[in-house]
Length: 173
Image 1 (spheres, rainbow, N blue to C red):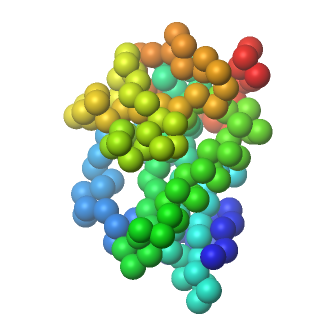
Image 2 (cartoon, rainbow, N blue to C red):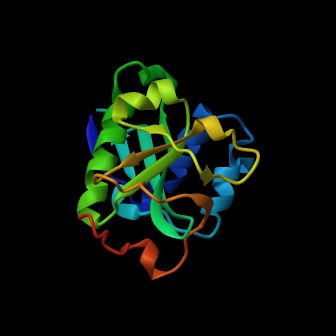
């Protein structure tokens, strides 16, 4: 497998993978409203290609604000159905998260199943409000530095501007 940063030329293949792996209404989800007109953090968007060069996995991360605090919104992450069960999603998630800290990011959140994402260190976030109709039990977070989620809560909103590329350093880093 070849794991590399997503390039602009990969966009159509990645979108086709997401369309194949998720329900047709995936872009109607509230998390997509947070992504509207906001570029993803390109350094954290990865593609995985098999030995034929086909995209078999992809992950993206997006900047958001949680109560005004810069955070990452992980997702979507997808692996082609013919390659699921091989641990590829775990590789994508771990690598994307590992690249976030050196860029100055201190916290990551996502909307997903806690039993699955717990293996990566994600736990339920209380007091973090995703746009409706998100189930609050599916709002999960991971601190990239100790205490990064302490005192952080409130509404999750779009993150636009230059700060989306270079977050402010946390006093805990």
